[in-house]
Image 1: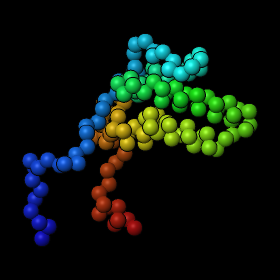
Image 2: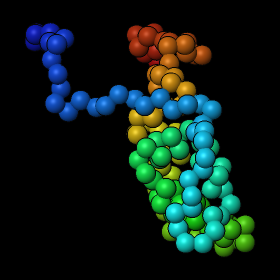
Image 3: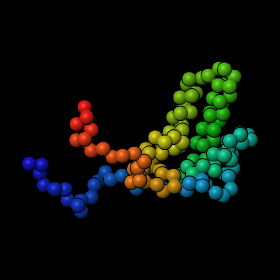
Length: 137
């Protein structure tokens, strides 16, 4: 016996928050001032036009985005010079994950661009039942 059916009115103590829908057109408005000493490097304005920048602004991540941009630009310069730095590339990847700049990071942060459901109902592929799949083995 599988046991009693689950209570539809039960509330989980460890319930996860809902997904956050980010605007597909990206963040609009004035770009924040460069938070670190010196002039803003290339790419500062472009980063703040991304959909993820809406959340960065709410979370006050200007300094973290600035540090990411410096690391990313340095890593790109080293790659173009033919002197890749594995530790720096690893750090850039980790920063990208924390800022929601990769598909997996978006999923972990529960951010969705354009309000599309993370599991779409309109699938391009065909759904195959497990019995049918295993029957072909």
